[in-house]
Image (cartoon, rainbow, N blue to C red; front, side, top):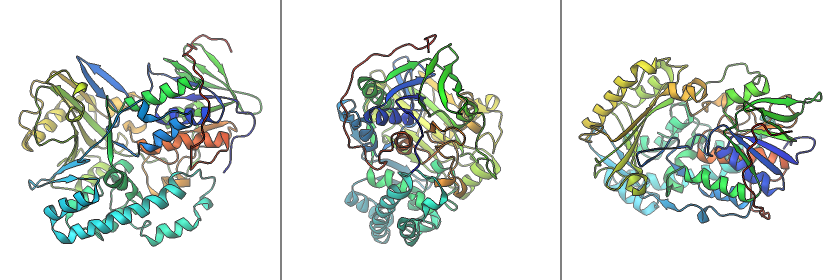
Length: 516
């Protein structure tokens, strides 16, 4: 594994999202001095928080899997996630509802899930689930060991014994084909392949290796942090602060100052600060990182971005007993849905939706007697479907609400106390490329060593982190990307973070206008 050359005593991390905070914690644990520069007023990045009239809205991801990865990052500075955040295991992890009126609870416990599938689809698919679960566990072990928790310097790094193991398990086939080997019921196949939306590729074209995401959801289990998802980056920032990090919130990095030798020697902010450094971690979105670097990498084909999403937040008195914490509401069409999202650029004509009701688990997220609902509707990104969302958003919101009412949520969206609609236009305004928060799609040509690398060419002391680089999109992978970035600087192993460091306590220091 290549590492940065030259001194790396003081590292500036640009961005206080999950990947930047992970990098900061691992760097602190390895004895580096760390300054985190964040343009927002608080940590979190995509995992942000907004508050309206007593409602606490998570503005980014709502599903937390593999929380031990966050715990590993905090352990680098002698902290434990459980000392900062109460994690609540969700059972069911999801409740799936289908257009034919049937429903399925997705359990993490293997015996409960086998029994549920036997009730739902019969004994043959229940037995198939047992085999599928074992396959997912094997896929996860191989993927994590050699492909997800890995810094690639060359495509040749793929040539390991685990590549042969992955191929032998069918990991280089398509996701849909492999799932169909185990379960016959088409509804069940959706439950174990809908996660391909996160990868930005239809399950009929996505590598079966990406079924590792289904492992995270359906085998490893889904958790909810009390206080909302934003509690996780807040805890990570607290741990980094206690370990000696300096945070500069409300500071937007505009320039990387470069020495004649090509090294980044300081970052400059829009507020007039110059922060000298020995190395830089850029955990900002790819377009922002490329602008700071003076351009992106040379590629034969331009980056292809994942579909985007419309998110509707609604708070009020209404709730519905059929809703669990996380709910999958599937339309009748499936293949057409993916064609619309990734090829034709049309909004879903028969939408499949994620409905999250966090107040089922944590009532404190809303005023007493009130409920909070989060509806995520995948949609084309602005490159695939350049819709004028500013003009169509109200009509789309109404059609979404009408569809939910047709699916049994009577009165949904009627006279809400709080409502917020987020569209690709809003994601674009937050500087997400192609108006999608899911970054570059995981096509074959944008996977592993073919994804934008975390060592940008021409900058000997700069490394990237975040969902646009290795290993990819999602909460677990964002946290891992921070660890991989830190390993490029420290040279420490990327597969473990069990080392401990003495903690130091300090306070945040405003850097706007500070001297070099």
